Amino acid sequence: MSRHQGHGKSSSQPKISLLGRDLRKLLSWMVDFPEEVHIEERKNRGNTQFQAMVAEEDLGKVIGRKGRTVRAIRTLLDARASLDGCKYGLEIRET
Image (cartoon, rainbow, N blue to C red):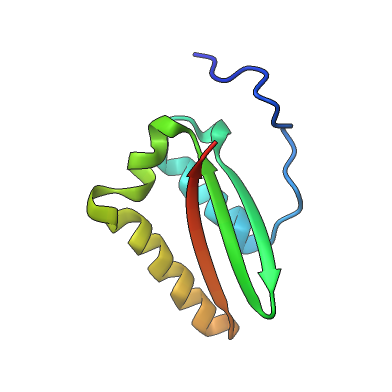
């Protein structure tokens, strides 16, 4: 089943950190369209904001009932941030 052919995204992603790659892998395991998972990473004064883009059909899987799934992912990022001495944020959007 082919989706969004020619939607303008290139297959290569901008360079992201190891944590960003791990986040992309985690999200890819959760969704029906893993090829649509893209991560952008912005750093500002020791803080890193991840923007995860997933297919519209997969938003519910990533967010979860009452936001439980995305809250759990943010909790994992908070735990990692305490080890790294920084802050990580996560925003979920559709591609």
